[in-house]
Length: 193
Image 1 (cartoon, rainbow, N blue to C red):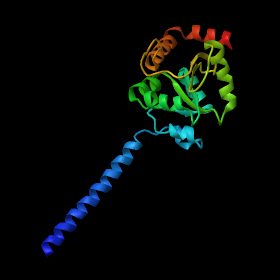
Image 2 (image 1 turned 90 degrees about the vertical axis):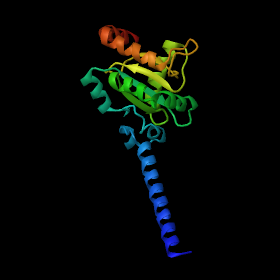
Image 3 (image 1 turned 180 degrees about the horizontal axis):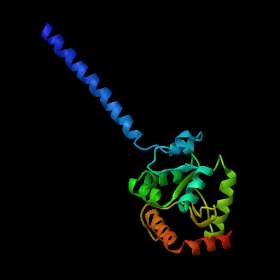
Image 4 (image 1 turned 45 degrees about the vertical axis):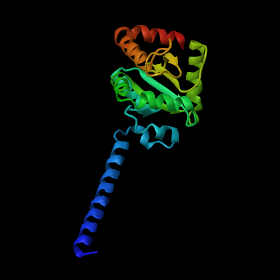
């Protein structure tokens, strides 16, 4: 090979290395487009949701104080790492920027690992079973800022499907009801609890 050929080969090799480096940086940045408070948790299940566009909070006073201060209802999602439908709902709804925006605008969203907090799971699963006749995971419950449940369910598809309400529809209905009839919802939740 000639000197000219060696330079050309080194130049192409250098371009290939630079392109690979830039591609890996872009891929890494895309994976971390969103980061929420779950990034500081230890639970593998909660860490799985740390890069959702949903502004997730772990169960705790920071989330409760935000709900009280902003007078927003809480959306509580309870699941565990090996739950199939938990992963499906995450992919269909919690990774969807449009749905995440609805959640972030209208609710304080809390994610709980039932294996880490069986006490929280038990309290709200009892409510879901009593009000819907069934239960399971992911468990989806809407609470007043005082942590009193007023609507509950399990998996919701993102859109209305086969007679089952979609998550977007449920979010919209609850957000509108909270804005129009907050006192009625609070009174009703007091009676249910």
